[in-house]
Length: 144
Image 1: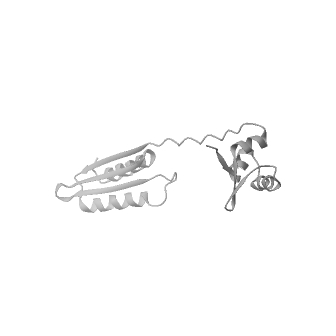
Image 2 (image 1 turned 90 degrees about the vertical axis):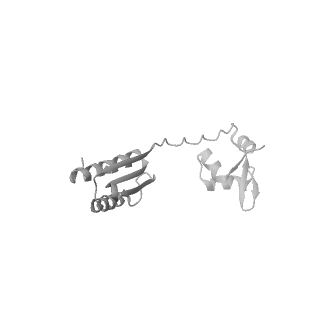
Image 3 (image 1 turned 30 degrees about the vertical axis):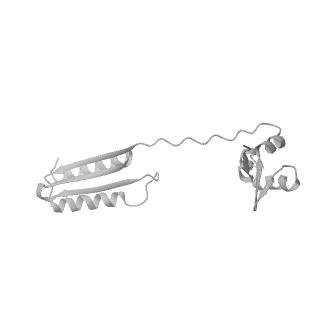
């Protein structure tokens, strides 16, 4: 099956401006098929034009990601402290992430047991920052 390129792809492959490639097509120097309002250039026609085999650039590899699923249990915590800690965590995660990553925090308070579970789902650096915040808040209130 023949492989086709858009004018933009040909321009990128050859290191030319898109207008230059369109000019070659309009002048008949580069064969192309018009599909609707766009041109498509067959790989064979492009190789004839350049006089060399065309090797499309390899797609860039996906950056490696590492995420953490963390549960922190805090014992002996009252409702007032739970609200303060939860509000502080929500403020810390508000807004867009620097790397566009996802970060999710949930809290589950068992009032009768005086425990709080903080569930953190996110990348390693953001999770580490939240753990530092939690540690500071619980030490401040004598829980560590």
